[in-house]
Image (cartoon, rainbow, N blue to C red; front, side, top):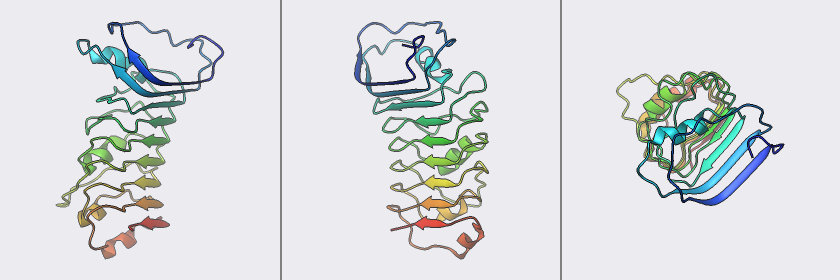
Length: 209
């Protein structure tokens, strides 16, 4: 498939039967633009997980979706990545994802709906090196932020942020991207909207209900 004329490849309900082994993947000469994989089941638990994650992390395509697959980690690409859209919804990813990763410079959209993220500050740090990121979906996670004047270094390019259905309280307003235009905070534990929200001068849409 990779070295064919196929540009968009989708696969669902795949079960791995053979052992997972290290493999030197040839990324050259592909026509592939987007890969979508859903409900992937890995039955071999005795392998070096980085061998598998590295294949996906270094793909030279613009769009990749790996969803509903109990994925617990993804590596930072080895070199500057062409990814513009990444969708990892309904997996088991945590705050360790893409920390100190500086190769996702072209990434514009990142969807992490329904994973296991807990720290809003660590999420902000994850985005800090994503210089092109415009849209981030962190809905239906376990996110909290206890405030205490902790700096949240969001990507300055981020304009759309979905934090709905988490465990965020009023302190969330101390940890928001300065240039956000559309902000979703419904289904959290927010009781008051502080006056300081007016400092978000670019904010056009705020969803709380």
